Amino acid sequence: MTKEFTPDPVIEAGIEREFKPDEYQPLGKEVYVKAADMMSDKGYSEGYLGANIRARMKRENKRFWAGDNISDYLHESDKERLIDEAAEAFELVLDRLLIDRETDPNSKGTARRLAKMYFNEVMAGRYDPAPDATAFPNDSADRYEGMLVVRSELRSMCSHHHQPVSGVAYIGIIAAEKLIGLSKYTRIAQWCARRGTLQEELCNDIAREISKATESENVAVYVQAVHGCCENRGIMAHSSLTQTTVLKGAFKEDQGTKKEFFDNIKMQQEFAPR
Ligand SMILES: [Zn+2]
Image 1 (tube, protein in one colour):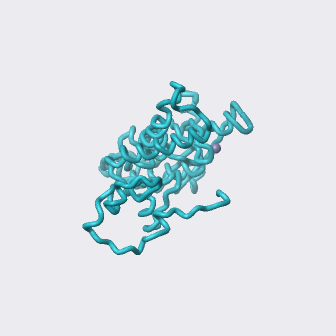
Image 2 (cartoon, rainbow, N blue to C red):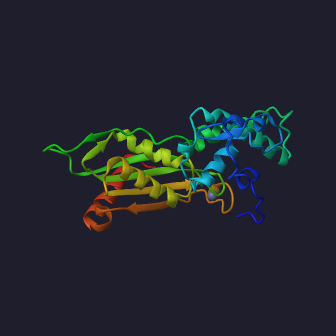
Image 3 (cartoon, helix red, strand yellow):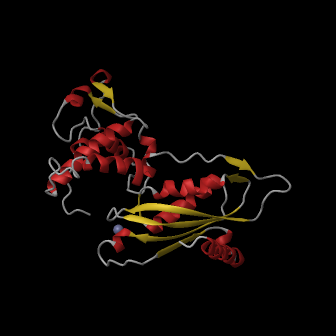
């Protein structure tokens, strides 16, 4: 937490303001801004799409932490504008870091590269809707009733230091009435990972989303990852590994199921060492 909190002029003021449609124009998804302010150049003005989206989320008590998905609050087409706004802000960060982004050829386009990287890559899972995971029925007489374990490679970013996190998730489920395509497990896990995360939180998120997509209550997720914030700074540990496990339903209650899951992980690790 920062010690000093500066109230956001857009968010703190005028929420109850009278809405006169002809004075406003649309800016992003269900966001309207005074037409006059769109043109203004007074710094952090109402014309900033990002500021308006934040105001709307606050108003609606929508949590927008680094690990939260906020795709309901933006159109795909809003991204370009949000990237422009973030690029402008990253320029200021580089200036404050006393990096010459005017003559240093390697720093010239860095602000925009960072903005694009955040929206389209390292934090894409915040802005993109959940991957489409069509479920296939698994309810015939010869339905599959066993355990399924999928190994998913993950790249994430810690929300504390914005340092890279890389590792694998082993996702286990006991097949329920519905099955999803094998690649979908990894797509869902990666969608959860492409945000600012904590590994503990990520493990929970993957379990919840897999459970939602498969309608199975018997889900287990084991994640092992290395963290840039422990490797590149601080304790500079170059071979530290963090492991987290979430067990639900039979994986938690039945020792045999739990053991089968971890035996499967060992077999997977023989096939593909990390
Ligand atoms: Zn960190």
